[in-house]
Amino acid sequence: MHALDSSESDTETPLVSFPVRAEGMSPGSFEDIKHVVDIPEWLTRPIFIVGSDPLSSQWLTENHAALVRYGAAGIVVSVEDVSTFKAMRRTNSLPMVPHPAPHLMRLLQANGIHRYPLLLLEHGDVLQDLRGQVPAGQYVGSGR
Image 1 (cartoon, rainbow, N blue to C red):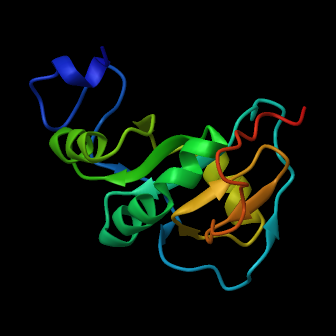
Image 2: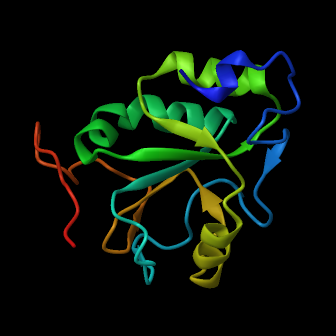
């Protein structure tokens, strides 16, 4: 059971206040094809970063199988309210939480990344195009 499931409010929960917005980040494509960031030690599994926008929804649908194979967890950095977030969760089986993730957003922005959706791998690669990145049916775990 998720804490968000019991909330009657569309603007706050015990853990998150809505709307959730990541400063300096917006939906769109990267300017460069390959990005690598210096990953903090706490990142032990791939993380995908999305919003509740149409581009993020399409990216989640198109990359769902690859995200599952990666064992990725998600952070929704832009969502207006609890009901929109709950609707996102109902449309796919991927684990995700709403949070502006300010420390992670600053790390990405310091490396020239101001757009999402994206997948951040535990060794530092930042990807938007996941086609061909994971062998079919293979889980990619932590390389640490």
